[in-house]
Image (tube, rainbow, N blue to C red; front, side, top):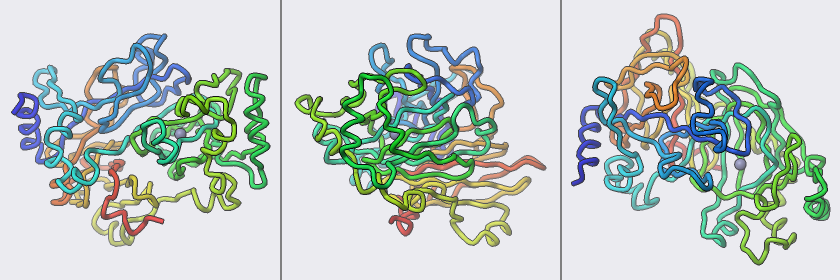
Length: 409
Ligand SMILES: [Zn+2]
C-alpha cells in the first residue's frame, strides 16, 4: 500500500468517514471573474494574468481542468487534507483515493457500475454572461472520444448578495425558430455579432431556485453565482460569435466536432436537440423550485429542513440542508456525497466547520468535506453551534443516487 493511501485510510478512520477537502480554484482566461467566491481580491489573479482570473471553485473534484497550455497537472483536482499540524498541511488527491480505494469511498457497486466519481460540481462566478453554447449528447460526444454532458444550476442565496452585470440566462430557442435561422447565424460568424440571441429568450435568475439543462440544449449562463452539478466531461460548442463586445473564435464552436465537419453547418446544427430547444413549455420543464425531501413540519420538529435543489435526472442530484440555530440532527443518505457549507458554523461529524469570510489563495478552509458511502448510510451528526444563525450546506451526489431515483423524469 502506498504512503498516500495509508495516510488517506488514517484520515478516514480519524474523520469517521468524513474527509476534509482543500479549496480547488480554477481560472478562466476567456471570462471576467465576478469576485463573490470569498477569495481575497488580491488573489483573483494569483495564477498570473495570462491564465485569467479565478472565477470557479470546484468541489470534491476528480476531474482535471481542461485549461490549455500552461495548466498545472493538478488544476481542478481536489485534495484531501490528511493532516494539518501547525499549519503545515499534508494532502492527497481525492482522485488517487477514488482510483485506489474507490470501494471504500463510493461503495463497490458504484465503482463497478461507474468506475469512479462521475460528477463535477462547482461554483462559477462571472461579472457578465457566458456565450450561448451547448454540450454534446452521448452520441455526438462519442465521435470525439468524450462523454455527453447535461448540467444543472442552483443559485445559493448566501453567495448571491450582488447580481453583477447580467443576472439573466438565455436558454433554448424561441418556439418557431427554424434550422435555416441557425444556418444564417453560423454563416454570419465573422461579421460581428451573429445575432443568435434574437432567436432565444432570457430568464431572470432567482436565488434559491435552479434549472436543469439537458445535453444539446443552448444556454448562456448569466452573472449569478451558480452551484453547478454536472457530468464530468468538458465537451462544448459555442454558438454565439460575440459576447459583451468580445469575439468568440470559430474554434470554440467546433472544439468537439470531428475535423471533417468543421465547416459542415448541417452537422453542427444537427448536434442541437431541436425539440428540446424550441419547447414551448421550456420553463415548466426545466425550472426547479427546491423540493422538501420529507414533510417540512416533521423536519422542522427535528430542528432542520432539507430540500432537493437538483433533481429529475439520474446523472447527478443535489440537496440543501439547513440545521436551525442551536440544533443537532443526524442525517442519512443512500450515497456518498461532497458538501460545501454556505452559511454558519458548527460540527459535521468530528469536524468543526465554519464558513470563511475571506480566503487567501492556497489557504485551507473548514467549509468543504467528502462523506463516504458508509458514513452517509450510517448517518452524519450535524450540529449548529450558533445561537442565532442557520447552518446551511449543499450536498452533491454522483450518478444514480438511490434516494433521487423516484424523482427521475
Ligand atoms: Zn454549459
